Length: 271
Image (cartoon, rainbow, N blue to C red; front, side, top):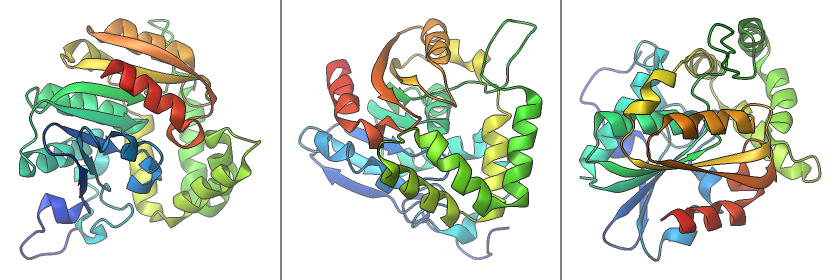
């Protein structure tokens, strides 16, 4: 539970960093097991034209880990509230939100809640639901049993889970250093926070929220990704009213690390 006393501002709590130009802002939000440093190959490319905002979710990077509250973060709603609180303290208007993986859906929900705050979304490897839904024909890529086993293995041995899952998620066997970096990032997570975040992510179902996104949206998907297949990106494109999909010539779930030039080029074409 969080400590008592006067809470830190959202900017301090989430180790918010602001760089770049005056004017319109662009917020970058990291995914599970990562922190704001994962944007180091992409975010600086926009500093000449945007005010760039990066931050760490509670439990990650330089955030105030004492602020972690398992009730607040039992679902993605707690993370959405964090994004909105940061946006309010920065007085964001018509900003661009760039979210990786789980943060793609967090950004979509934040834009629905505060449509004046974010006018454009960039979703990097999004998935609105990881579990298949046979009743509707939706394919998320995993059965409920798969997800239960994944979370159980994370809870039982987080270090072994990180060592096996991170390289597979990164999906760059020809560049093992990236897989090693993600493994180290996963291992730095508090096991309890990691388990809670994983449950919030992998048991979420945000399909019904997608048609409510009014922000102009770019979806970036990799041609091969064990967590989010191209068909998932196509589903998001079909459900979000004003959206487009770019399939990157890249593998894995973290193209902002493995193929940053493609990510930057796609974003510039969109913006």
